Image (tube, rainbow over all chains, first blue to last red; front, top):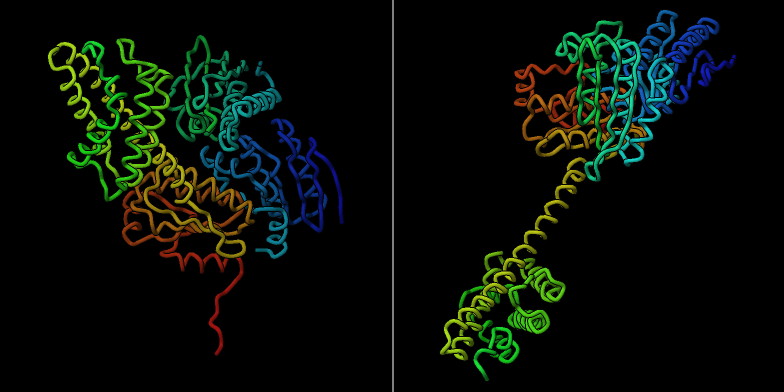
Length: 123
Length: 127
Length: 289
C-alpha cells in the first residue's frame, strides 16, 4: 500500500507500513505544527507501525524543532508506531549537544535504509 | 528587520546564514550561530512581544565576525542569572534557548530593563 | 691616502682578502666554525659571499647617520644572511654560535682600522662605531631569521599534531575508531568530534569507538567532552563506545561525580571492538583445525 500527501513542502509517503517524512528546507514554527498534524493523521489512516523522519536537508535544528521531533516520536508511540530520526548532519548534532538537547526519547539512525531495516527487524 | 511573526524567524535565520557564508565560516560555526539567532529571535517574539534584529560584519581576518543585535520591547528579564540557567523558563519551552545560545557563540551580551526591554548581542568568528 | 677618507667601508673593499681570512681565523678562535657540521670550504664560501654582499651594499648605500638596515640597498645582504643562517642552523649550529659567527668579523676590521688610521683616535672611534652598528644589525638579523623559522616550524607542527593526534580510522566495515593521545583541550576535543562525526557520515559507520588509552589525564572537562561526543554520535544514528578506561580513570570519573549515563564504556580496545562486532551482528570465532 502506498500513499502521498505533502505538508509545507515536506512529502509524507507510506511504504509497507512505514511512514516516511523528508523534512525539506527551513520550516517556520507554524509549518512544523502542520507537519505534526499530517503525520499523526497519516499514521492513524494507514495503521503504520514505523515512522522515519529524514532531516538530512536541515541545516538548523533549534530547541523548538528539537522539541517537535520529540513530540512527534511520543505521539507516534501512542499510536503504536516507532519513530526513527535519520540523516542528522554533523554540525546539527554538535549544535544540539551544545544546546543541551540530546533528544533522549528519540531513536536515531544514519539513513532511511538503516532505519527501515531496524523497524523490519523489530530491534 | 522586524520580528513579529514566527515566519520572521525563518527570514532572520536566512540572513544570518548568508552573513556567515560571506565571512567564509565553517559548517559547524555557521550552524551554531544561526541556531543561536533562531533561539534569540523566537524569544524576542514570544517573551518580548516582538522586536527587531540586525546583522553586521565587523573586523578583518582572522578576527572577522558576524554580529547580530536583537532588540525587543518586552517587560525585560527580572532575574538574569536565573534566565541564563539551563532548564529555567517562564513559558512552555525547555529553558535551553537563552543559556544554549550563549554557548553557541563566541561572544554573548545581554542588557535588559523593564523600561527598555531586552537587547541581546551575538558574535561569531569564521572558525 | 688621507686618513680621513679611510673608512670601514673602504677597508672592506680594499683589504677584502685580508679581512676575510682574519674573520675565518676568528671564527675558529671563538669556536663557532663548527667544522663538524659545516665543511671549512662551505664556511669560507658563505663568509666570502656575505662579505662581498656587504662590500657592495656599503658602496651604494654607505653607512652615514641615515643608515637603515631595512633599506632596499641592503636587500642582497639580508638575503645572503637568511640563506647562511638557514643552512647553518638547520645543521645544528646554535643561535649563540650563529651570533658569534657574524660578530667575529669585527676583530679583523678593527685591526685594519687601527693599523691604517693610527694617529686620529676620534676618526677611529667613529669608524669603529659605524662598523659595530652594522655588524650588530647583521648578527641580530641572523637571530631574527632563526627565531622566525622556528616559529613557522612550531606553528606547522601544531596544526599537524591536531590532525595526526585525531586520525579517524575505519577498522571494519561500519566501524570507525579514533585513538586519542596526550592532553585533550577544548579546541582539540572539538576537532576530534568534528572529524569523528564527518567520518561516520562518510564511512556510513554504525559504531564509533573512542579509545582513550593514550589520554594522560581525565578531568571534569575531558569527561564532559567525551560525553558530548558520545551524545552527538548517537544523534547521528550511530553507537558510541568509549574504551581504554583504566582502573585509575574509572576511579577519577566516579570521584569527579561525572555521570556517564547511556554511554557504553569498555576497559580496553579489544572489548570495545568486541562490543562493536556485536552491534553490527558479527562474531569472532576460532578457526577449526
